Image 1: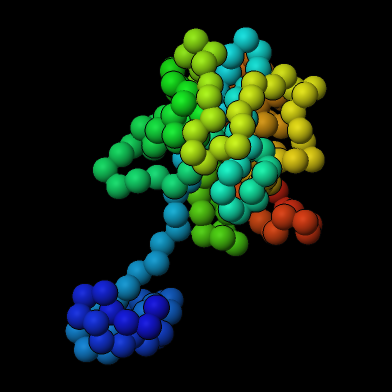
Image 2: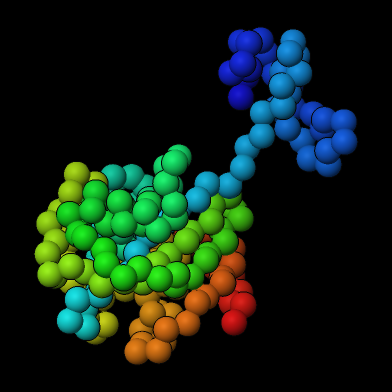
Length: 186
């Protein structure tokens, strides 16, 4: 950040008085510009022992499979955001959502909040952000073509837990293509 969004003057990276982290601070009006983690919300939607996956039509990871998920919007709950993302990516209506897991990704300053629910009537159709969508049994999941470690971890836990439902808290550290460190708090 080079300029203050409040007054337009330049900012400087420094530790504000009474704080313990560097922040962008305006040289003129002294507004502190905090940068906080982004919340990503998504769903594992079930239909007749299959789960919904979407093939990404956007970067990052264009052409790879993912669960329907995306950044939470202002003025919505986590559950509303997860249902909205399912509809936007797969024209899927999510029913009976319940918390499945919270995944901390400190390297990229994101927190994934995943829900588990039912897919209404089994209806899916690719939305603007998806090249295609599909319903997959465990044996048919394209494991090597999954977009993100959090998707792999969520699906592995889902199939391990089924039919019992548990809530998961997981830290995922590292980069895709390198050694990923996963810590589960059960």
